[in-house]
Length: 229
Image (cartoon, rainbow, N blue to C red; front, top):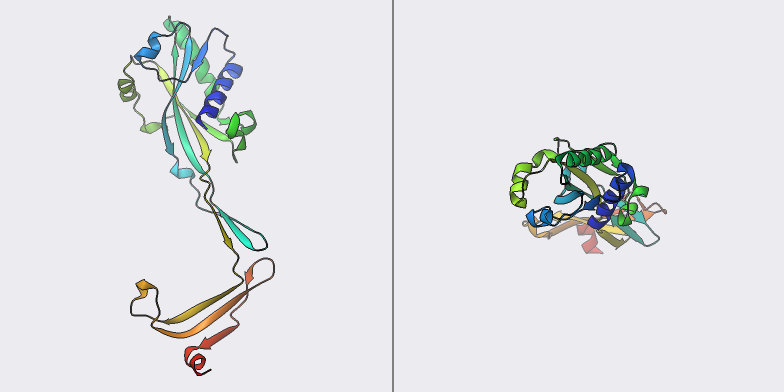
């Protein structure tokens, strides 16, 4: 998934930003050793944070039924992937020009269309939103000064882009359909153990029709009558 997003970003930057072939796009860690090896102007997109977006979490599950089984599928989770975008060149004016070009590309693309993405991102249920240089959540939780201190390099002008992608949890539960169920009613001195000391009756339900609807209770058997049979 990360590799597919990297390729999508690179394609977006090169096609929409009209970058010349003399400019590289890198996704490596922009530390001191990396920057010392640069020989050409480079736009760096470093993914430094990955976490679930709780505001977009859905707990509703999808249920599909066949003749004998039911299938329960949980919706995919939404994951925020945050990139630090910086420009690297010999002259500061070239850096600013390149960085502004990248900022324009991302800011004018608030959403990545699925059909314009690479790899597994094409299979997403929804398009991928982009949050560019915005200090509202999720970007407000980042301190770029602290980030550069960890990178062990001189601080550069840059901005943060956050893409919210889908993560398929692949949690699928299959179970046979229940066409008849019996509920026992009674008393218990230890209900936490889920055992009944005295059974006062039984309620039986039967499924009717293809829709799996449950019929009203057909019979209620009293425990004392049941013992006399």
